[in-house]
Image 1 (cartoon, rainbow, N blue to C red):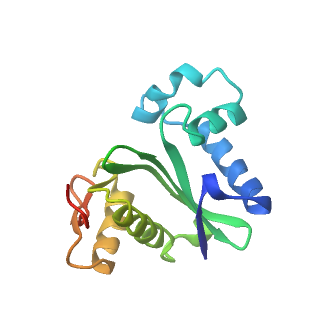
Image 2: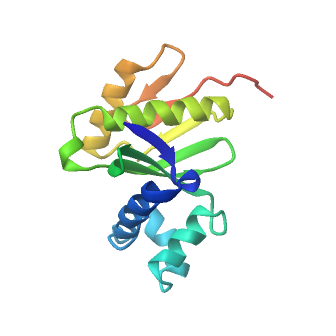
Length: 163
């Protein structure tokens, strides 16, 4: 499996990822925090919405894409904030479920977040059974310096250079 942030993609993988994310933007949960935040741009064509969201023009959104060659196996939609990363969508394609895709994505994001001195990784709100299951599996895979609170979806990260 290959993992890459949407903002860094090129070529065929960019095409596959764009198709998946455009589909996601068309099926947002009405009333979700992300749907509410993006209402001011919802009238725009989906490709324009995606460009605004992932180029820092409307928040600091990105998606960690997981590929099996060029096919998208899954993705995590996320927003970067001052000292936290909020993962608000975890999606794994059915053929790849229960194969470690989601846990691998979390490990990848935690590695990047730790290097970037983020203190907190918020994964959902701790209310979704599937997300809670991913967090439990992730907890078994991470080191003792990372604290996972599955009830709230919080992953407390070690800060390498505290201010």
